[in-house]
Amino acid sequence: MRNDALFRTHTVSQLARLSGTSVRTLHHYDAIGLLKPATVGENGYRYYGRTELLRLQQILLHREFGVALGDIPALLTAEGSDRLKLLRQQKERLEQQADRFRRLARTIDRTIAELEGRDTLMDKDLYDGFSPTLRADYESWLADEYGRQAAAERMRQGQAAFAAMSDVQKGAWFDEALAIRDALADAMAGGAAPDAMVLDPLLERHHAWASRTSGRALDAEDYVALGRLNVGNAEFRAMYDAARPGLAEWMADAMAAYADRALS
Image (cartoon, rainbow, N blue to C red):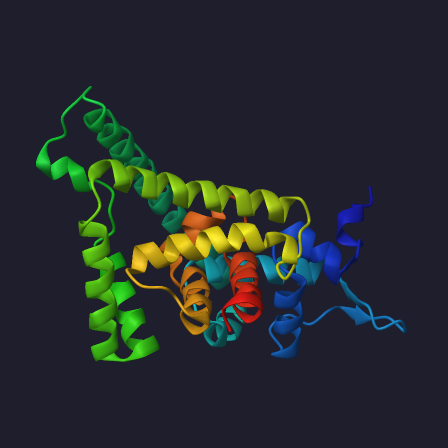
């Protein structure tokens, strides 16, 4: 019996909706030779088949783990047993990450219970599930983006802003982050393009939240860089993509468009 899924083709917009990526991202992958369409019609439309869908799945898997785009082509050349081995390793890493997020969720639940007077956490349990490499990765990214001296100042400002918050304010800060993330995920699910002006109220809210977090008003360059960080850092990307697959990249595009419109 014929499996039609093996023979079906998708336009670039259909593939973007199917995979949760943006059309802009797929055009970029085409331009750099990472994901070429199977055919291009006389009308100029790109068409993607099963082979391209599977290749995009592998690209997105590598991006989930923070692999740089320039390093992905070599990984995609793996075939046969090497490819299966790679997939099994990725599955194991995902399971480990899922377990850590479950522990983080429990830590948050128990912290909420303590703030509400229903429970008290032991000191060591306050940090159950946190990644010991996340802070180091963030500091390294800041240094690469802005230079060591500027990175240290940005870290100091962010730490001071967070330390100045009361426990209630920290809880509200976290709730606001999730509320904005989920609202943007809903907008993406509703078919909003990342450069749509209808997103401006949400992005203005997000920009204000990010500025409070950083202890300074983020300019256009900083806000675009934050979007890149959310895509390039596996932990941050997972946090956003947990709400909707592909949200981190879609949101980075939206942040860049908003920065160009409202912050430049």
